[in-house]
Length: 310
Image (cartoon, rainbow, N blue to C red):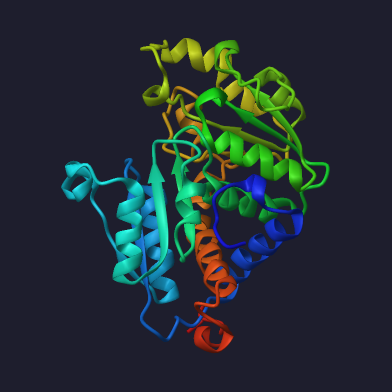
């Protein structure tokens, strides 16, 4: 693994290694890297959780984060994303975290760089680091993936989270189901579509997605109450979920649209646990890439120590 661009690139072994690494980092912590390294966060689209958790992950590892604002950068003068990335590489960054609006441009960009690139979301393409924290949250709950029934529910057609999770969960042996308004289905994802009522009855994991209005070609106005009643997780549907089943959402959450407001922090919800897990999942990604590239090694990292309890 030289870059982290798509869940389709990763084997079952690689996914499990990253999940176990994330879990170990959360449980035992890590001594910060004892040399000066820089991580550049190139976000060309808005972000709260992803950008902040990458920043915190970098600082916990001992890296210095280089912030970037596309509105005040040379992008406004016509500089390409590739040239921006090459600039940060030339200035000494050891890893690049990139979020931008186009699909299928990060692989050729990464091919031209000598440092690892992490996909922090590429349009409707993929969001692999979000998927890893989702996998970690599921693993913490069930300690397995094989045979689990997982429903991904919402705006499938426009969701990069749906794609990454469907690919990764399938690789790990879970049964993936999709649920969506008919016009928001995506025929390129070869997974069965079921109704949300079937999903809450049969699935161990119910993952909601927000409506991606910014990626719709047309101005698709929905009635929030009607959408929740027809396609969202209502209080009545939550009551029909399996006793052990959990609720996930990559956030930001549109309360009262894809999920009833009171369910966001309910007993079955793991939404804020997902956010917490994002730091450790992203630490694992960065650490693994830097090790694989020979940028850091075990001696530089230092021995793990039980930081909790200090």
